[in-house]
Length: 306
Ligand SMILES: Nc1ncnc2c1ncn2[C@@H]1O[C@H](COP(=O)(O)OP(=O)(O)O)[C@@H](O)[C@H]1O
Ligand SMILES: [Mg+2]
Image 1 (cartoon, rainbow, N blue to C red):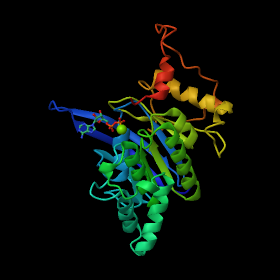
Image 2 (image 1 turned 180 degrees about the vertical axis):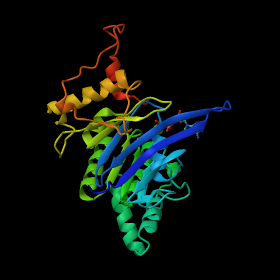
Image 3 (image 1 turned 180 degrees about the horizontal axis):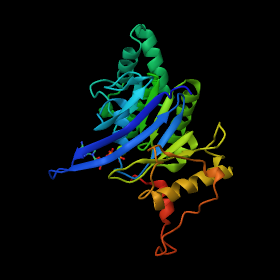
Image 4 (image 1 turned 30 degrees about the horizontal axis):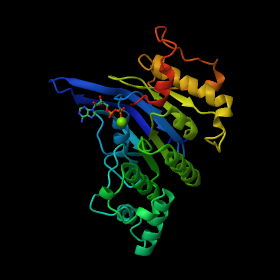
């Protein structure tokens, strides 16, 4: 079998706990991504998702283990890995357009100024910012800034796109439009996407597989859930697919009932699960919850990371 595009082997991250001790956020994290896959990762706040993503980006170092992309060890950032952070990170002294052009020029140093500009404008228009492209970040709203950083990552077409809750700051309508653009770009390119989200519906709509992370400390990627739903998928009709409900119930049940105890397989690899081949799970409400309270499962589905 050919080697996967990205291999993560036995990764761990230990931080000082501020009291003279150590905190092992996650350990024995191993997984692989195939070229062109779209994988989302879900887990409760603080389990280490952003840290894993930063290690994949080469922006943070693991305490143990390694990351191999295209047969080479990841050590330090590269234009082959584009990142959209949870908190947008733009150069404050440059306009939106110049922020994008800066990345595009670095990616394709041989391009003419005109090529760089046309390409950059195209991606800003795609995220609905054609009228605001000459504004600096301080003159843009939070959602607009996030769209600039999304446009910058898309425009540089990295082999691996790393997205850390990229749509959290966007209103529902804009989020839908940009999710659709992401799927379009991804399906037209050979890009591999690794995305953190706290929204199970978003994960089901977008992913080929969803990684489920157990709670920290010593968090692990316990399961890899197959999203066995044909593409193209539409936000408006996906709810009619019985497979959608099977996957959703499975994810919510994990988050509500199993994230504290779930473990990977004996080799440390995520257990492969296809919820459409399992008996249905119906997420249990805690017995003490009263009938008029918002269901635990629903609030977990909406905001595991809130
Ligand atoms: N620089 C740091 N020093 C100490 N602890 C940190 C540092 N960065 C993150 N952590 C801790 O590591 C854990 C995982 O953080 P993070 O990767 O941001 O989680 P997530 O993205 O899943 O919410 C948290 O408990 C956080 O407090
Ligand atoms: Mg995070």
